[in-house]
Length: 163
Image (tube, rainbow, N blue to C red; front, side, top):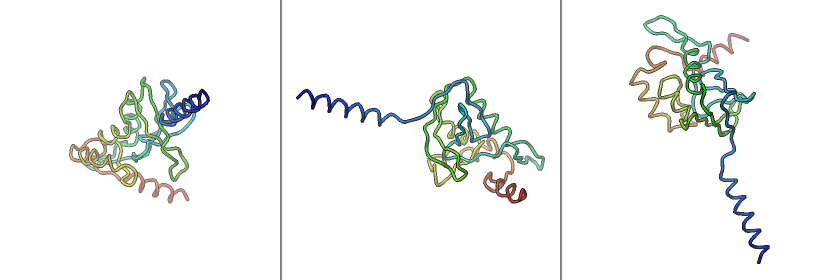
């Protein structure tokens, strides 16, 4: 009977441990690479479910260029600065980077970036962000205040030109 109690207890503890999401938590070693990419203690994570302008990408407002990619990175920097950032791995993207769902002080960073208009929802991955994106577009927030090339198209153009 004692063995079955110990075995049951071990199984219960293992089940409880499996229910806790594996992730990383950091306060000091968080750097925003661009509007959808964080480096945490030497590991690069792309925020799952969004695509933001590249850090060197420009957009236009009234036909004048502005550094929308740099501003998207600055927005993500502002959301993470001095805050505990917790990331739960979500997989690997098509470029080989780890993707993660990250939170800072309990706020979903990807959702906030979409809300402020600094990132677009990746429809196939995160349809939960579509309504947020539609509202950001309606509010003309972030990149929605002017004209922009989709980040995925921008990367294709840059990569083609580099060949």
